[in-house]
Length: 307
Image (cartoon, rainbow, N blue to C red):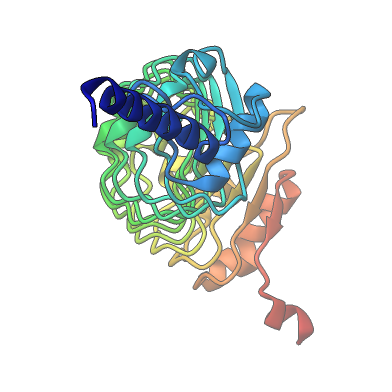
């Protein structure tokens, strides 16, 4: 075969390969290392819907202008590719199957982030989110919340049902107005005394024996501290903005301090104190006085009501 004929054959083969490659790729350009690659098909479909691009490779620039994504309840497992959405301000990833949130690292504009009902234990990628104001991590196996120490713009924090024992990293979050720490492994809350703007505090189902520190939270209106081992109500009695307190299922016997509490004319206070070992004098004297003073007291268990 002549050299000219050989070159012709080689060129023809190259052309055929190019055409076949184009067909395999659906006629779309071949992906490059700079294109966005998703490991989770569901996440890719939802992102394509959000940017209005059902087909073709996705260029990172396409994701840069996204500011809101609601991806809850889609059983997403892998967030690879989401790291290109650097301008997100609102992201809801609740009710998925996520374990790794490293793709969220660098989302410095994030303001509201919802990660409820996943399987996340490492939250270190959140440490640089200085603009974060609302964070929900309910129902995850988080034990270390130290990465949140620098997120001092947070006003609402939901950590219900995790494995937290140390809450001291929250001490600098002085803008907090609402926090849920129920269903954890907390024993000591004294480090939270700096949270003077707090209005709603959830502490249910922990191992707390003392409410020391709460007396500094002068703006508190609602406290749920049921199902703990609390014995002393002293830190609560001078909180003049309280309207609702649940201390059910604790170890409280003496209500004497509250019997001296007289609410302001425009204030109402409901105290739920069921399933506590209340003393005879608390039942016979203090509770009637408290009711006469205008407090609403719920102390009878459901069993007692039936009797």
